[in-house]
Length: 528
Image 1 (cartoon, rainbow, N blue to C red):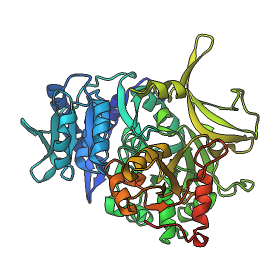
Image 2 (image 1 turned 120 degrees about the vertical axis):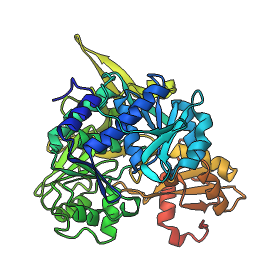
Image 3 (image 1 turned 45 degrees about the horizontal axis):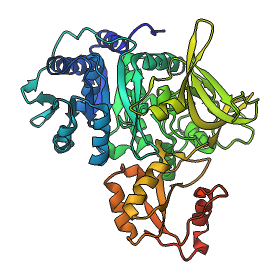
Image 4 (image 1 turned 90 degrees about the horizontal axis):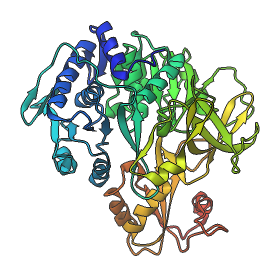
């Protein structure tokens, strides 16, 4: 256990112990721990020179050398990093910057222009750091190039240091910022190590966007173990099994949607990924049939289904699917049990604990539960609370997820108590899309729906229903793109004559789902 060490101390220990070993495979090249940390140390010196100790650092890049060095340098300097997904529209990026208030942005060659566009949203007015000339491994700010530095910097963080701010979809149209502490991530790394047992000989996948907190596992579980991080090129994200085979990966981590896409392409053939010893899935319900197919594809791998919201640091529970496990007719893999040191409760609407087999809301408690939301006291009070005991206290988070507890398999996912869904692993508030749709379509009668709408498989896009709009579907989708990231923009806009409502007067999304399922018998539906 390393719970007394900060993340920076763990990383520096690994870098010193494995300096000559490969830390990253990127764009066809291996980068050693010595080289990676030398570049990060140079950037740490720049941040110390240009920023205040508690300033935050925006990371406007993905799967590139500046992205990896930027995150690493922020952590080593004791400053929180703020991921800014390059695929998000400028309005959403600016909203995140206005909330997080970083003083610097680190960019790469693909995001240089956008970084300068967003500079006005930085503090004092902030600095920009990006590649020097045509060399993606050379960084510079306005004062000049940033050289490699050795020896490694002395850690300046503590367990209470904010490690990163991660923004999730919000019901009001504004993303919610979650503040995650060093000790939250430390608790997660200790808990997940009981499952992964990574060593310097492991070769681990990295395909999550930095704005998706599962990326935190990729980087820091790998580097604190002295292992090698293989960054999947953006062009090969949907070529997962071939990439695993080509590079002999030993550890895989993705959302189930990635495996489902590989299945549709016919990649999940028996024995196609024999090098894998560990397969982790998280972010969406994992269909049992899909998990079985992956297990046959990677016959030497242990397969784990992980579950956990951003507010409770990456993943909170785990379930291992063994080859001969009988799941008694379940269609999704169970959520399992909490990681070491963490607690769960399943409560009914009256607040009492639900007995085994009865459905209730899942509550998560323990050292992985974060301090909560920034600048959002209403949502914070609704979701987070402290429970005092004899000389101790436990911090709890109300997930909004419905589960039932089985004696044989632990917790089984049963759905949501609100309008939150997952699309390609991303958490999406349908009410946020509705808010944008009202403006985009110039009508109040709108509703968004994930599709395919299934309780047993992942959704990969959004469809929208519009009533009373004079705008064509193509114009509505165009208007949405200016405010929403691509995975939240409706792929189809369907015009209907009237919006179905439930007995309580709310939009009946189940009726809309049936409408699409029966669309061949609904000639009035308009495609867009």
